[in-house]
Amino acid sequence: MDAVRTFVAVLIDEDLRNRITEVQGRIKKLAPDVKWVAPENLHVTLKFLGNVREDLLPKVFLAVEEAVHGLWPFNVSVSGIGAFPNARRARVVWIGLEDGEDRLRELAISINEKLAKLNFKREENEFKAHITIGRVKTSRFLDELAKGLVEVDARDLGVQRVSSVAVMKSDLRRDGPIYTPLKIIELSQRGVN
Image (cartoon, rainbow, N blue to C red; front, side, top):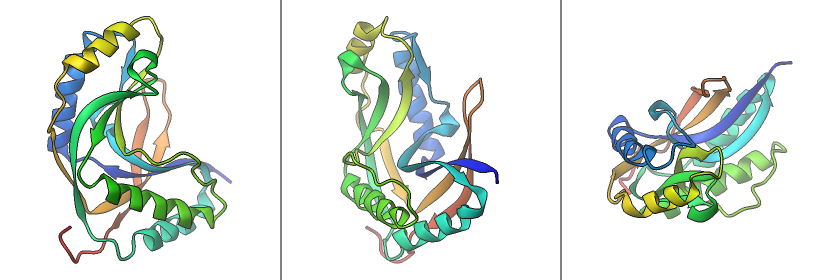
């Protein structure tokens, strides 16, 4: 039985992707040893599932549908830049999410709980909503990167409307991953916040 590398995510609107790409461009000069995420791959990961047998995917779709049932669409503001675990030891460069971040956490927890019933490992770490924009390959330019994270203005990049989640397929390729939505699941259409 074939397996599909799978994750659940909120996809990023094109306008916002363009603004994030501008921020990446301003940092690239300062941090040459970062593998930057392609604009079409920018997203907020709610749950990484790893390799999932194809015959289990319908159950995954159903669990995610159950997890989002009754949750209304909402907005999150996209603002700020940083690194995990921190700027001096950066492994991942991210763009932050603010207003509405608590709703994203609620969404991630609900998805995590429903998928745990299908024997997917529960997340141990607290959910930290972010958009990964780069992965640090070496530690050679960490000082320059840390300086760049302070200097680059990534405040108030815009607002992302969260009205659906996507169960995504990840094909790992030498020139970078290709992400394909397997199923888009809409949040309830009632309500504004």
